[in-house]
Length: 321
Image (tube, rainbow, N blue to C red; front, side, top):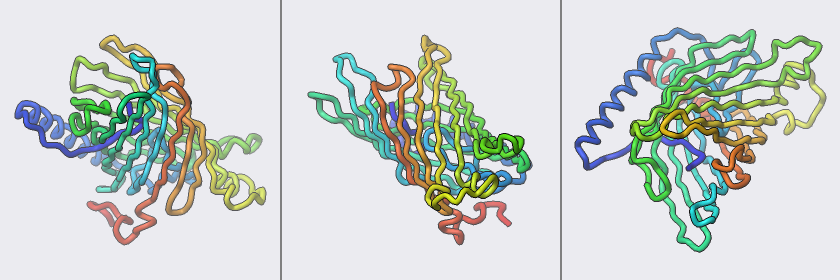
């Protein structure tokens, strides 16, 4: 199974399947449009007060903004197969998110996967496309809080079955949150650069014989930029002041159809946060043997489109001032 999620494009030959998918997409569109009716005051790039929440690699951040990840590259050993071999998987993915209305962004992503197994031919292909919508509905600058709600849809049948892409779709309503610790007492000001972000999702499979899944995830971050600007400037080298050490925990738990087990990884790493872009790299340490057969690695180059191309992305497509 890929470490990436992905968006939408497809032509199916079966009229019944096509009508079912069109109905599902219409429902998705209505849900995504309905959340734009909620009121909010917010900033781009995940800013709440003095806090900048970076774009995390393995668990999504709470901001709705125009941004892109090009590329995200991961490598990890899959669980042993029936022959006792350990397939090695490489994923190369990309994601584009665009602010289409105030505080509401839509996203599309995909990943190319290659799997190599000892004494077997390598297989490769694209994963299923994924489309998403995210609405940032709450911001509290004093307490450095951001919250968003959204829906992620993996479009079944858009990827290659030979690398494990599911022929049926999955819909995941998700809550996104971020909380900075800048409101802690001055007596423990060394903890003020800490922030926690995370997601709470419920993946509902279109194929009812497949298990639905609870998908929590969270990240613990320590912003050296925040330490310098809002706590104390220790005169550290400039490159250090751009670093954000982070540990992410993307997790999953089966809810039905015989799957009642936890899976996931612990991902310690570091992010370099610039003004218009960032780069991050993390280890992927399996928490269960059913997740991976050893430690992998994932890296991402991420750009803030509204800073990089302000003439195009500085305002939402619709409703911008």
